[in-house]
Image 1: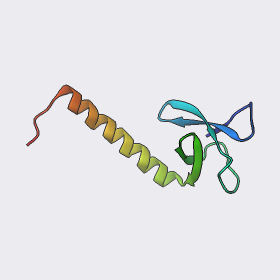
Image 2: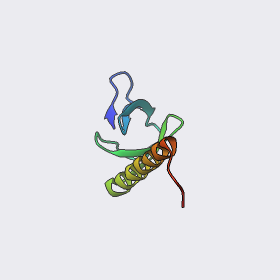
Image 3: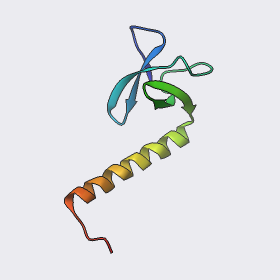
Amino acid sequence: ISYSDDDENLALCDFIGLEREVNIQLLKGEVSVGDYVIVHVGYAIQKMDIEDALETIKTFKDFEDFQKELETGFDIV
């Protein structure tokens, strides 16, 4: 997460290379650059600790790899 120049309630979030402006108004407590958050329909709804965030990112990358395998075709045994 990094802050937007336009509005203090907006932050720029990066999800594995995809950047989007996200409303952080719903988060309780302070939000800092480098924090990890869960985003739903454009709103950050919860902060995550780094271990959970990295595990989630790995899971999404695993899904992406699996999808690529499906597109290229392989035998399911």
